Amino acid sequence: MNDFTQLLEDLDGLLVTHPANVRYLSGFPHAEDAWLWLDAGGPLLLASPLYQNDLEAAGLPHLLGRPEAWPRLLAGRARGRVGFEAGRLPYATARRLGEALPGAELVPTQGRVEALRVRKRPEEVERIRRAMAIAREAYLEAQPRVRPGVPEIEVAAWLECGMRQRGAEGRAFPTIVASGENGAFPHAGAGPKALAEGELVTLDFGARHAGYHSDVTRTLALGEVPPQRRRLLAAVEAALEAAMARLGPGVPLAEPDRAARAVLEAEGLLAHYPHALGHGVGLEVHEAPRLSHRSPGVLEPGMVVTVEPGVYVPGLGGARIEELVWITEEGYQVLSAGM
Ligand code: ZN
Ligand code: ZN
Image (cartoon, rainbow, N blue to C red; front, side):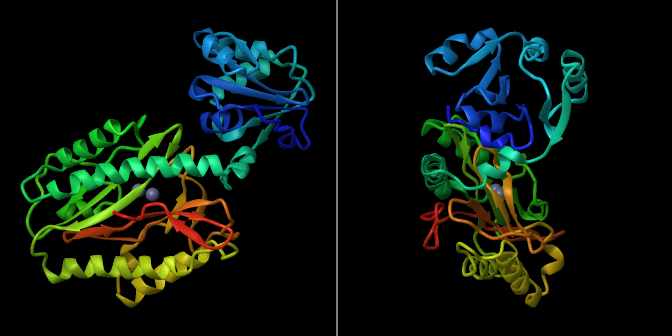
């Protein structure tokens, strides 16, 4: 495990309870069942005795106990100013912690580990690249079978099965297959409705590999699509192109979204674009940074982000295209290319 004591800053200890942060700091694959304690002595995992073998095999320093006992396990170590992740600790657990550590001052913290996770290390990018390759291959196999008459849920099953067959730990999130009027809901799931001639169908999916995620969206036109629907897809393609032209290290995070919004505004579709342009992807499907026209900050080398303009028109349908992009020192690489 790396030494992450720089995270302490003004604290004597930091309790990390958010699974993605625990995994980031320790590499422990069962991070959803563990806490990480960090003090000047370095990191220490708290986990169930079920994981004793895994922890010893990985050489990770640890204390074992049932989750209810973890606050008491810290009692000998946690003193002074003890930080905890304010957004990631249930109220009941926070109370137990306070009771177990009467001499400590509990200090709420926000986003400390997340700030480190924004810029991916090369080995993290490789895991995301592999998660993306798995999703791409599943899509390329399923795509020729996406035709009128097939239920949405069956298309979702093909994608998810294809990703598992290629070694995914699982899907990154519940696969979206939204056809026709269902496409007007940005987070529609996949239901029994059959795809129909003349519709647009939006496929939004991704795989998880070694804890890391991919996230990609394609919108397909089924047969002869009437012009008012084709127009939605063409506008999203133009917005995507405008946004991608503004990507690169040092570019304000707000700028690609501004470019996409300008295109959709000119098309009279801005009112139908209800979300931000994109988000970071890594140990979580949605993580920092957020690519919105309101975001402060700039794109930095090592960031992996989505670019996903979409429009959703009730009664007509919707279209979204999502690329997964790695910002590099020189520019960027489209991880979702070739599909
Ligand atoms: Zn997506
Ligand atoms: Zn996304």
